[in-house]
Length: 413
Image (cartoon, rainbow, N blue to C red; front, side, top):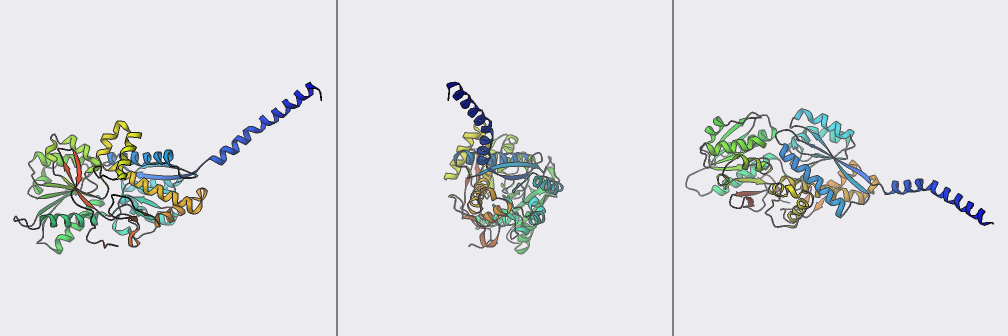
């Protein structure tokens, strides 16, 4: 063959090869594309708990950024999409339908009340839901899971600690106040439990209950009724928490504030901005179901690293509360769930049913928590223990003042 014919043959071969390359590249790319697992985050992004919900969203998305960069889940890419409930219970069903329509494989629900409202839909559609706290009526229900306990058990734990701490004091039974928000299920549940405990042993403590309308910012009436209480259990959200504490201090309240796990740490920057002197907050207490930044354990150090890595400008602010870390704990649970689902059914087959099965069988030991994260005694609650923490103005931080303990109604495994 002449040189000219050789050159022509080579050019023809190259033309054919180039023409087929896009298809080859496309096939390779298609093979490399990961199966997408979608977490539908239903939260209050513009309502009274927007500050906390925003921090939760940052913590959860940062956790999966870290997973993607440091130890990807084989064959899977995790996507988080959101729906804003505005803390309006009526928006729950519509939000569920919208997130489901976007391909949600598992829900992450900011509020256990919305989870309880939507249980029938989760069960009918076979799509699991995970949240940070639960409700009394759903602790044994299928397709819904919670990191920690419900508000009545938390109220039990609060009174257990108050009465044990008060035991032996010469001034007699403690005077306990409770301030909440009328119409909020969390307030109703805490109120009902406190009244039940008081009725069962009325001599053990005095009880005064107050519930203000949503949006209340002036508290003269409520504070005048609670001013003589030794302890006020604060069961408010967002700006209401801040305005109540500021006004109670301004009006001379000298007792102890004890926040529910929902009330204080997620909004503590709002509180500090509202109260001019930090020493006026010194000794405030909160019931806690999560680790806190002063716990010296590897998970807290990992959380700090995540902040410095992804949100250095907000690291100090986000690190002081517990919302960011609680979301990272949720990320830890969800990532483990997805990994085990992949191991069980293969990446391409991970769906809502596989994720539900993986959550049911979870059993993680994380240093710093009071017990293994698993579905204890047939419940769907992964961690049932609580502790009391205290704000110290000199250090401008929170510290545990008790070990982890179980609410009285919860039997140890």
